[in-house]
Image (tube, rainbow, N blue to C red):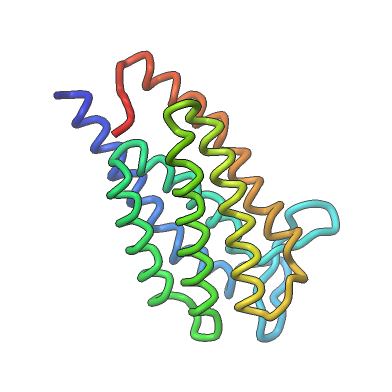
Length: 187
């Protein structure tokens, strides 16, 4: 009983953090960067000589958090989180990028879900890595094309999101090991 309660609490925390990544990403893209392009995004460096819209950092994190929501609360909760996330994205995105924001969020998270779900029982960390990489590529392509009609920042988008996923993978490994140690199985 205590394990179920712990899984639920951790799932709700991941869900809250996942939900917060959406407004933060939308705010960052228009307000924070080393350079803000007129009528375009604010950019941050993600690698030497490569910049990306600043919201990429939160989107990379969102992909990982959605996987944790599914691990802790189950597939139905993860799909619900995607739907709520798309709604929040649509309500909070700047008008010029609302369609791009919602479409990219929805398609990337559903792609992440489709890849993560069959892989998670065999290898949790590999499932997070694979689903996040595919999700971040889909998010980058859809968002840039719909928002700006250009893929100029594609490499930066992918690199920026990949940094967040790479930073999260050791934590996912530790989470999986802790889950095994205390007997906490996925929802």
